Every structure is written in structure tokens, then in C-alpha cells.
Image: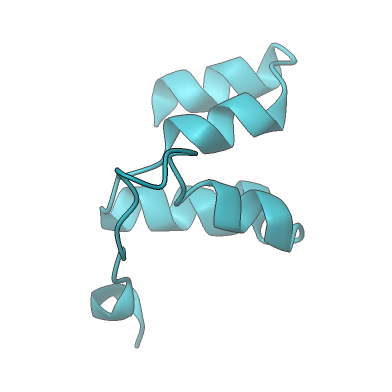
Length: 66
């Protein structure tokens, strides 16, 4: 997540950073999503989608909710 933080600080488009999170299902990734994309539902959803329907799956986040 440090690299993603740095990319955002350097001005990388949030769309690219969100796409790079597709398939990452860790507690750290969830915190990153909420922090950086929590105010934008489209980006938040994009961070779960690979853009390839053949590869997309359901990413279950319920283990991180309290």
C-alpha cells in the first residue's frame, strides 16, 4: 500500500490506483479503499473490478466488518 500512497501523492490518476487494487482482499487494502475511495462509490467499486468479466469474481469483505 505504500507504493499506492506514493503514487497518489505524486498525482497518479485515482482510476489507475483503484484498478491496481482489483483482486486484493486484505484488511490493509480495505482500509486503503475506505480512506482514498470512500467518498466516490464508482472508484470504490472499480477497485474490486478487473475490467475483464471472465476474471471478475465476488470479493467478499464481510470478514473485515465489525
